[in-house]
Amino acid sequence: MSSGFSHIDANNNPIMVDVGDKAVTTRTATAECLIKLPDVVKNQWHGADIESKKGPVIHTAIIAGVMAAKRTHELIPFCHPLGLENCQVHIEADDKQDMVVSCTCRVSGKTGVEMEALTGASVAALTVYDMCKALSHDIVISNTRLVQKSGGKSDLNNTTKP
Image (tube, rainbow, N blue to C red):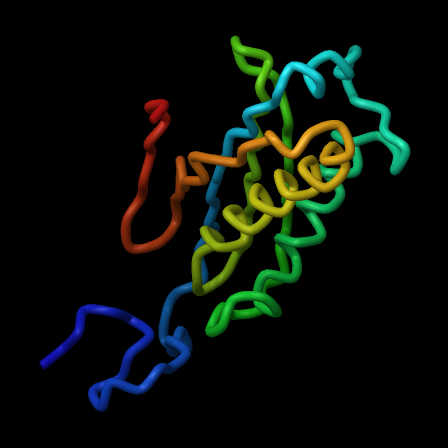
């Protein structure tokens, strides 16, 4: 009886999925999350960044997100190590002046980059929290989700806001 999970073998043991017979295709994925900011943090956002005692918040978070995406296989069991060809992290204000973090990853490979995109967006958001927590602990990271993927067995395009 199959569990339906790809990382469980017939004996219910955890396994890494064998991608050896899969075709190499260009695979992309975009993930995003929302950072709800209290006014005390929003008031520090001038121009393109927030200057903190630790340095520029948004620019540092972008770098952290890319670094995390590149190391996803070290953080998530059974993720294949991938040589990302591109990783872009963007952080912008929404209509409420909260932050929307997006991470898009691309690779030519045998497995997808969803986990890399999700990890990149998540760590970028966590970096914003870390750098702004001196101002307030009322920062909320939410709605982390995959919004787009292509190049594998199935594509996804879910740009509808939650």
